[in-house]
Length: 89
Image (cartoon, rainbow, N blue to C red; front, side, top):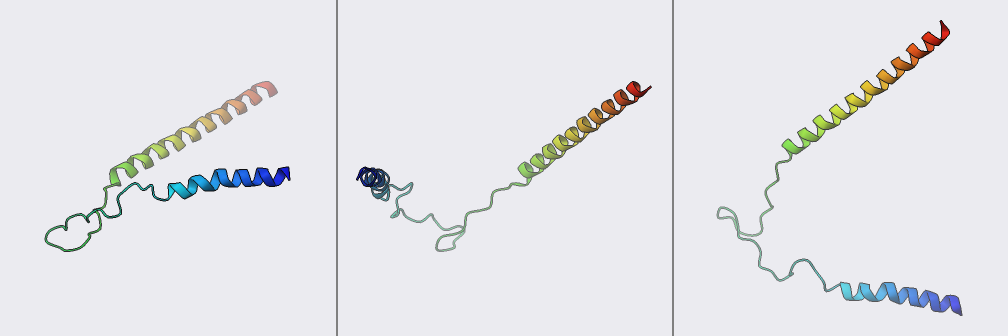
């Protein structure tokens, strides 16, 4: 009986807010459509945002980060091999 009451309580705690959240929207569904561009009628697709500069910067930073990691890894390996050779002598 206790499990059934806990399950029902959990259900109502989850389901009840979901029922009231449906009418809450970020934008009014009855808002007028945006004006047409250059004499065209109807809704127009939004213009694309230029992402070339941001993507190029991210690629350059990623390449620099990867190159630095490779450099540090090789430097660490070189130090380990020099330490081993000095111990063997």
